[in-house]
Amino acid sequence: MPLEYNLDGKLKTLSPVLREHRVWFGAVLRAAFYPDSAGPIETPKSLLPWLAEIKSENVFDVERLNQLQEVHDKLHAAGAALANAGSPDGKPDVALLESLTSLIEDFATRLDELEKECLLEGMGIDALTGLRSRRALVKDLKKELERFARNGKQFTVAIARIDEYKRIFDAFGDEKAKEYVVLVAGLIKKSMRGFDDAYVFEEDKFVLCLKQSEVQGGLAALERLRHELEEENVIINLGDSKMPLTMSCCVAEPQPDEKVDELLKNLDDDLGSTDHEGDTVLQYYEVSPLERYVQTADE
Image (cartoon, rainbow, N blue to C red; front, side, top):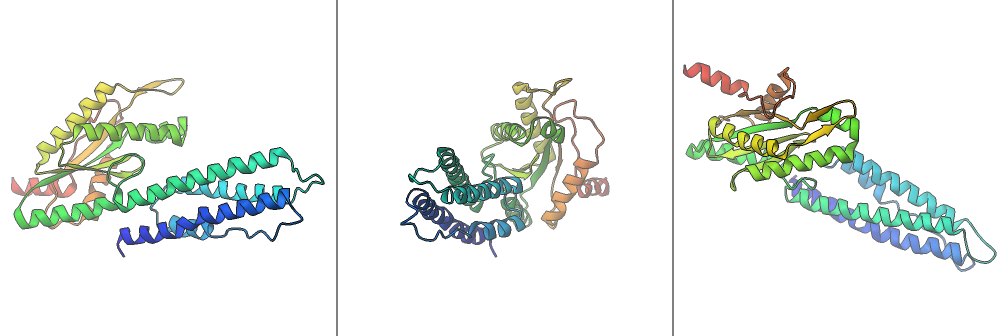
């Protein structure tokens, strides 16, 4: 089933969640301030099944979904506490009211962000970086390979990784680490030609599709990215040490009959197999195992 159809269905299922919670919120307030006239409170139950299903599809960041679920659970607990507080003068503890109000605002904001992310993902756009999404990557590379097979228009694929990303994540946490991801994504956009495409592959990895280009053209594109990163001169302070923000990459010329999944796996494996340390910017270039074989066979 196409991704766009799946996400459209998921978005339609998500849309009623906030409406249900607004009705629930009103019922909680009535129970808290006018208990004698309040009816039964129907607790919304639509979000948790939605979250369970969307988590299984690995479309969105699981940590963000877990955070939404945590806010959801706290919201319902706060609602129950306020509704059951009871008071002879009809004025429940203001702290309970403020807690519930804060949580419903947080919950609504997170739902709104998730809806926007669904829409962007359906269009093949990564919400965090503005680059193309991983789901779009496979579809687009298949088209490029088909075009190459039809008319012989060579293209180059590169994978680029932020060095020491786990160390950055462990030192600063998810939010700060993602700031570096966004920064690098912006530099990728600046360094690419208008008709090339860039994708988020993993949290710390990007794939570049450089059209009408052989390996040397791909290396030239990566050199432009190296220059942009060097000009940015980002120094990461780890407390007892400092290090520059650097990247490593691997580039290859796909063959017309190559499988997309194998191409991406080969590139990723090559990048992961190097034992270099990230002490210079984009210092590692290599071609995929298939490309090495082709070069050897042509000699």
